[in-house]
Length: 185
Image (cartoon, rainbow, N blue to C red; front, side):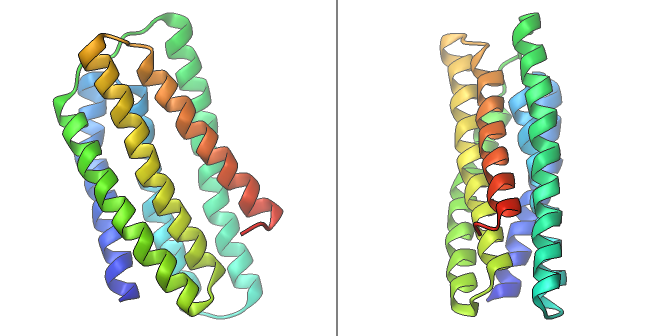
């Protein structure tokens, strides 16, 4: 079950990069680009979980959590700078039907995967896997936030909703970094 859940998460994250990034470039969307980078973090986090589960020890778990935390910290910095620049410059992203469809599908899949990871992590009493489940839940929430930003831009012309969706990603990334590095996992 664990291998299936991890493989499914990596497949969705890989597809996010392959489908989402071209959509982000076409739409010139900071939120879609940030979501694609978050998908790279998801791939890295899944790899870290598999690495951590292949060995034992509390030190290995701490190192695994820190690796995931660093990825989130880097994402937060990138999105904070990029979203601020886009808002300050008044840069207007284009519409992205592909981005809308893709983030809607991704949100649904990520919520399902998050449930499976959380349940497996609880059954194994593994803090790294439980944290990875939260990472996947956050991916679902972020997909939903990006989806709302894209829909508002497309339907109402609210161009600023795209970088604001980027700030939502920053908030969740910073929250995860704090939890990981404070030991509240």
